[in-house]
Image (cartoon, rainbow, N blue to C red; front, side):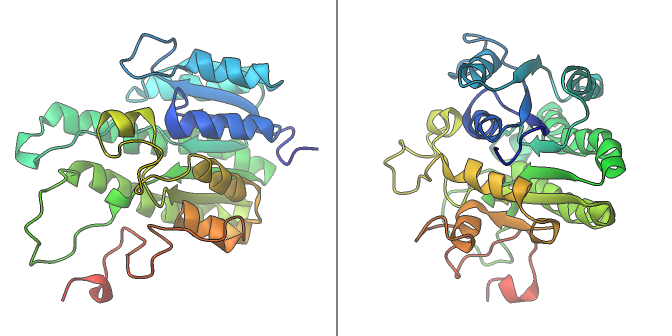
Length: 288
């Protein structure tokens, strides 16, 4: 029997990239999937990928999945996700908060409307969906919430700063740092009820359609790229492991896979001891 047989899972941002890969992985493990994103069908977005494709692939492998086209910036759409899940399969056992909206560039050039929109999707939807699924998880005494974070959560520390070009990820980094703090606070709250909350980021850049379109990497062969199988496998560990090995952890894909003996070597965050691995800056991590 698959490790998640009988479980119900929600994955946001499931039309492409990490979200679609995680949804397919959970389905292979026996979970029944509710896949959420804005792009319902191919051609509705400039990038390849859609909810229809993700659900079709899951069903083609014998899994169960439904698609919910939503704008997670709207509270009523977040509520509809949870209502649809309950109607289709029953209360959610697993929530993967993967959806994010990222706008890059200098803060002085970022429109306030974009700042607010990205916070609503990346942070507020994470809060609201967690709030909506938790009562049933607490009542049943089991649940897993995994929030996808990013290296951008790690601040640059104190000056002096090198004269390298700015990435322009101040807003996105602030959002991911907020998610990491939210993760640990929520983990402490619901731990007594048997619910595990964790956050995980790729150790390197996953060659998703978005990463390729933004020229973050050139392709899967780029030395800065991470195997696309790593994030789904790491998330599988977080939703199947014991509570004490999950609750409150903020970590990175290859860090966890090395810890579990699933890969023999790795690179990037969580692997290189010289690189900071959380969004929290302490005196020992500031530049000297």
